[in-house]
Image (cartoon, rainbow, N blue to C red; front, top):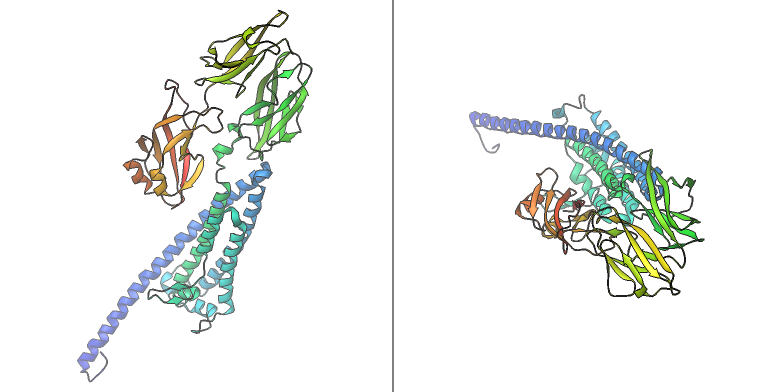
Length: 514
């Protein structure tokens, strides 16, 4: 266009073309600069919101570490270190951004932030691939943050540690032509000031995301509905089914989850403070008293969210005489369950099995010495009466009261796993949905005929059968990594006793891993 002999008219035309192209480039540049500025503004607001959420999570974890030191002390210590490292690195980036903004008259006028000379001078010595002290510090700060956070997470959170390393990686990258370039050159050399500013704000967003993911991982499985003290039941576990007159009663009271790390602030039994706490339970050892039924009353006291929470204790135990009284005990439990055939052993010491007769609604003799089965009906308790004759012909009459309980509520499960679980969407689509009875003394079979699925941001889908249908798969495909898919409202039936109505199953939460 500029070569050869040109007429004055042709030179004028060429000059106009150059001016036109320059104007197009200028307009495009302004639009791009505005876009980067607006993106930076949104990221800053998002970081402010993330800071508030993370601060609340830190406070919640600190409170739990005070209330349940054995359960949360290690997580609290790690979280404090991560908080300190994150705050220091975030502040370093913020100071660098402030220095960059100071080079322009108005940091909100993004169209004037088109030069990249500030970071070029701060980071790079020239075109020889060497960095200034400021450039090397920038790389070192990012690498140090990544390595120290990953070290704190350690073997306990390997996937999260790998995510952090990848998120803050400064390894070489390939450009659009497939050529390898140093990370710092590729991301910051020659870029407009506003573009580099936005990238730095994104690093701050990555820091906030890292804090959030770490806190979430440490508290995973400890949802408020699971850890609330109101969800625990006090259970009396005698050391032996029967306590003889004149002997000490031995046993302990534990919480239903049998969590050895869960320590109460105080335990009061029959007006006295119990100090012997073992495996999450209060160990009891006191004189059993006279023959008959005795009541144990008291309370567990826990601290939750800075306030005391009391769990009442009200249980009974029986003392029988030796050898004139019958010894009656359930083979598997200290209660009988409605809807289940309960095996029982009934005998009188020193009396032959054929000389013992036992009576109660739903009680039936089966094959075996002292063996019975109990199928309780309505009501909350059943009394078993026993008649026998001692070898000398003396008649013996005895009775025992048993509490009748319903089968506990099952929990929803995916591939037999329940609570808070993780799996890919592809696995969940094919998985069988069922319900189970964890730690229940009977091995019961439950048939699942339907369930509901809730994906965050999507409508609830009702499914017939025990596998995902097409509609459920469609909404599941919209779930993102980290989303918690809830499976609930199971339609279920007890196999072998279809007339018994099971309680509603607790939901299962599935965290999507990809």
